[in-house]
Length: 302
Image 1 (spheres, one colour):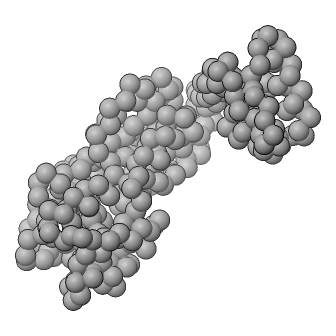
Image 2: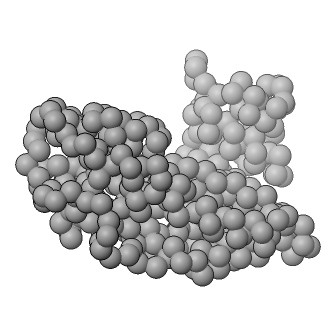
Image 3: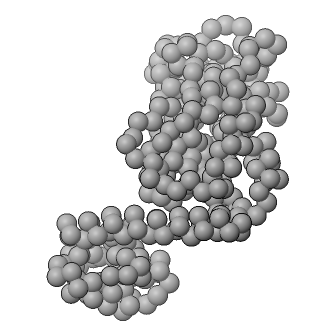
């Protein structure tokens, strides 16, 4: 059993076929088949069920695939930690909700890049549930997610405190259809559940939902009068949206949404990750939202 064999086991378990595993590993199918057969002979058990269409791991195969995932993740972390210690910068992959990436992160990233120009930093946007899966799988080093997180394999630290508001066009919604149309991300977004509760609390039922995959698409459609959305107030206040969008306050039970930074509890805290977290904690964006005074808001309640 070696790292190459573990990579083969994980690839076949992840893709469900020898051909797709070979594509993932950039090798020929015969190498994948030979590796699996050699491991099965070495361990004395069948690792995969051979089916007419693809392969599925046996109970023993699932156990080995899980260990392979953990071992390979630790090897990758070790490489980055050594590069960190040697002053070669290393790599850092951070996930973030689109609203966080658009509003909160730019000044933090600018400072981090200025202080650590050799670190290869990648920002991966996505909804909260997807980012949590990516962190747990070890595919990203950490992520900014919305709402409470309680998982034994994760460390979750509050970093921002967002105020969610109901967002409408400055010109107002002239049609009943617009009042009853919620525009937002998919259900895996942390704000989606709050948005649906806000619509029900406001009596805007029944309502329909239009899903988009980008922040600009959602806010652009709201600005055009197609419907409403729920977003952090910090998003609505920035240019160019403050000229086309207005907001209504939500009840306190719906308005407060903490943003947490999550990472694996057993992950290696590299020098680069520690420096990134310091840049986050020291930036003014980590302070609570400013008071409502002087902001453009709609006069009536939600």
